[in-house]
Image 1 (cartoon, rainbow, N blue to C red):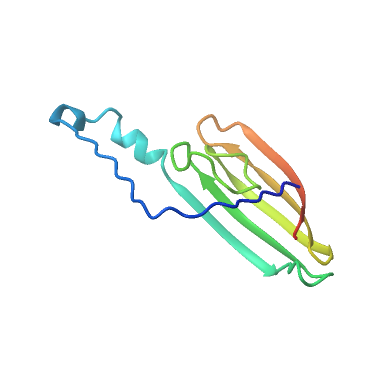
Image 2: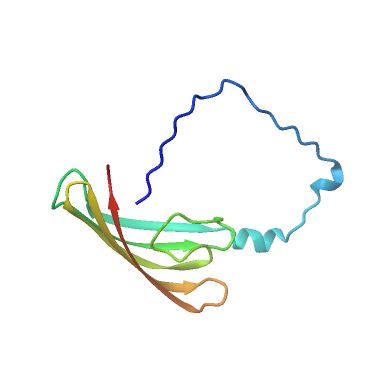
Length: 130
């Protein structure tokens, strides 16, 4: 459990960065067709109920499909998928054993999008809310 405290006043200054490009900087440096194919992101999810950290005993579950191609995201924030470059089915459940404690379990079963190699991931997490 990490807890961070910040005590700083906000600045009223506006910072501007000026970048000048010449015409030769506008040339394509990648194959558009390959990039567009590898930049797709598909996600579909069906949820049932929902865990509420303020309500001990509450729970929720979901099932879905994710396809995050190589260039679709630098670092996907889904815990249930391995990362960019994978596609497959996901299932997960959350349970609140006590107020402000959330237990989550998730499973991914799919494949790597380029090589087609099978991939799976099991993920469990306990979050404490203060």
